[in-house]
Length: 188
Image 1 (cartoon, rainbow, N blue to C red):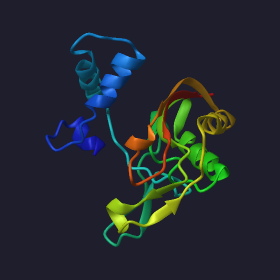
Image 2 (cartoon, rainbow, N blue to C red; image 1 turned 90 degrees about the horizontal axis):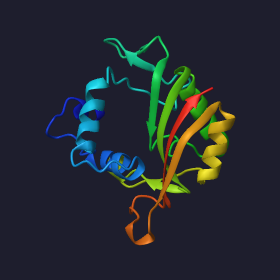
Image 3 (spheres, rainbow, N blue to C red; image 1 turned 60 degrees about the vertical axis):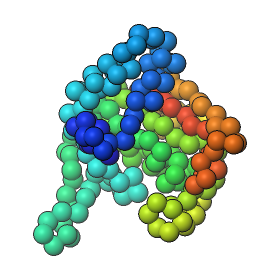
Image 4 (cartoon, rainbow, N blue to C red; image 1 turned 90 degrees about the vertical axis):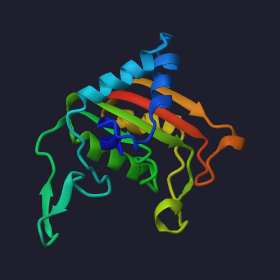
């Protein structure tokens, strides 16, 4: 989906509300084209999109080859930026597992590299209705303070963090999340 967005394919997900929120609400820019300009700028600066499986010991290991059995690493070098959105908490059944998964991601970052994340808050279950017939998965119910503690103790300096509460009447039926936390941090 991110590749479709980068390539500006007509069928890509519309991320413009997120850009509008960051540019107008968080940064206070009110020029009519500021959000669209920022989206175009980011699109032009995305060099590569590399698949990552946070549940693997080495998140960049993938199965390749004609027989599907030879693991290879998709990238040998650390990155300037790692972005993890709606994955870290969802894949973690405990706080410790969340910290372990975050440390795997931070292992992909260069020193002083940036972590950008968006995670659900106080999520205790979510539904895999889109892929497996509405099975329910349990997760660690982590608050914003809990995520901040996990990030700091894993080696991140939080540069900015914003939480958005979701009123009960607007919550998505596939989870019980109370809101989302958006974070920018640097590996120390």
